[in-house]
Image 1 (cartoon, rainbow, N blue to C red):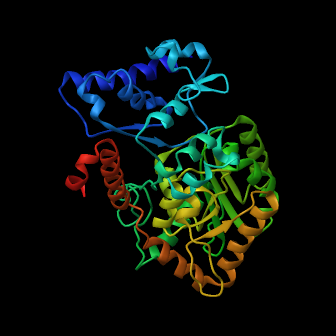
Image 2 (cartoon, helix red, strand yellow):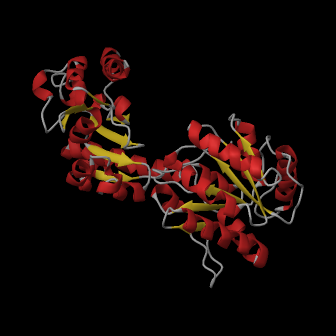
Image 3 (cartoon, rainbow, N blue to C red):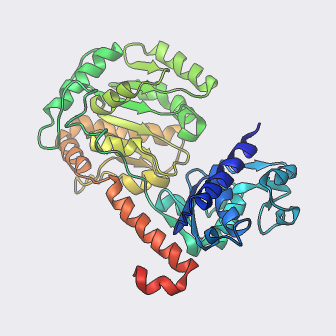
Length: 385
């Protein structure tokens, strides 16, 4: 209940500390509503201090969470009541930190190019799509990267055997080890589906649950690891009981086990309703575990749909999130596994060749910071070119 107080303190304290240290950053980079007051403070309480010269970048990781509260929360910010207006904090009668951050920041970023477009539309704008359309020229989408040292099948200490794109033999060892750990028949010839996720509606788990009896009628095995909504957990538990030889559900999270699922599965399920960026599909690509994803957010930006004519692609993509479409896409992936194994091998190698490290994102963030500084200080354009 005291989130507004705690995060207002965090944002203000960060700037007070910088001022006390005599440190004037070129850019103040705030992430999500929890730090959203920082760019507001740069433009208000820091007006007479050196920190007012700082540019600001505000990154939206998930637009659904906005720091909304009753209007009285305005008092907690330390700003005057005059800031509770439709150009700053007031949003349909409520107090909204994310709206104020969008209005006050020099530039705005989010964690994938597709999500940057999606959040400017009513279906995924969470009531702030109009604000974001108003600043569309200042909004950038930059994909997150993954830790390629922790997530590397060639060196991963959590998995049964190491492997890389030039020698996939170790992946078959990892598959057998995963089947054994899950208490499933150790069959190299069966397609294994994996899922590691929060088990909530955002991740499309309700749609998956509705399709699972049909999916498990195919010759497949399914391993799921995650925690989440109790109702969905109950549904999955009942399905697992009906298909004990094909479906293993783990509801206590384990990072080593997550690694073993990525290494041992043949396909990885991510049927998300929305996914600002997503990391598991990038882990899967690195481990040669072909993602089955919905075309949304970062999933659309990182997974290339299989083309049966050319054999190109790195996974299987569905457009419509409903049980029938999900079943058909999983069925397509599984039939490819059985009927065109050479295509699966080609896709695995292509997937493992992808570079989803932070190196590319870092270059984009450097360019974003330079742009923000020039917006704040046009006279520095030649210096930062």
